[in-house]
View 1 (tube, rainbow, N blue to C red):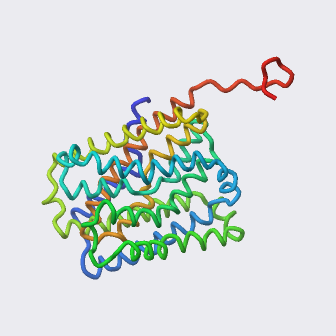
View 2 (cartoon, rainbow, N blue to C red):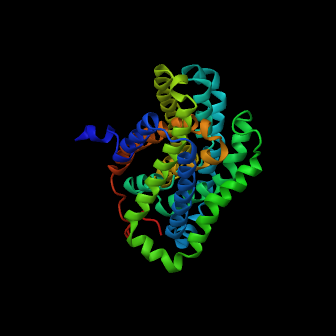
Length: 335
């Protein structure tokens, strides 16, 4: 029973199957163009539904905890990129230069929303702060990630596109549907809440479509001829090292800065995550199709690692004793 925590979940198995399908039956020409358009529509629908799902009350409930949010954003958009750049001489020899470009892209992505909140809830952390922090990270990433890509990967991507072009495209394809969905929340919010399974299908389906389209283009460009097995094993080690550093650092900083245990949990789970939901569509916009397959491969591996490791951490946090209720009038009790 304990071993099941370390086994891949169904979605990870679907991701592996999608990569295999794209490897053996890649689409090209008119079929590739059709899948590109279908993927763009699916991603827009995904962010539209996420906008409709996000409650404004949850945003305001957690927004006042600015020290926590500042630390999470600093880890997500400053510490992660610094780790990727500083450790490059040590880690890049473990993988190919193209794969390490994907590692650096991973380091500049926003935090994930669903798993960060789910693990915070499982570990009995500060839920309103987690909802606010993870959601704000996603929106902030729409602007910050393309700028950081140009900073840490100036040679990557389409030379004809600058950071402002990427931001504009991401805002059009991701932020606009999100805002429209949120504005329509009074009309469709209850429907989206009652049909949570639909959001999960769109969530996972859009990612699978993007991965299939990106890997098809990469296979046509010869991805597997450029990628030796030892580079894949090295990539697994690189992702594990980065995740271990960030988990250790977020725990240390949360305790050093005097946050309580509930806030520490939120900082650890929101600060250590990188979003597959945002990262894969952004890669499709920022990078040419032939490059996107290799670019998102580190993110896919890191995603599975963070889920397995954080599931174990969440269960450890959840086993801590419940705090004693404070009784009014008892000597030593706080007023």
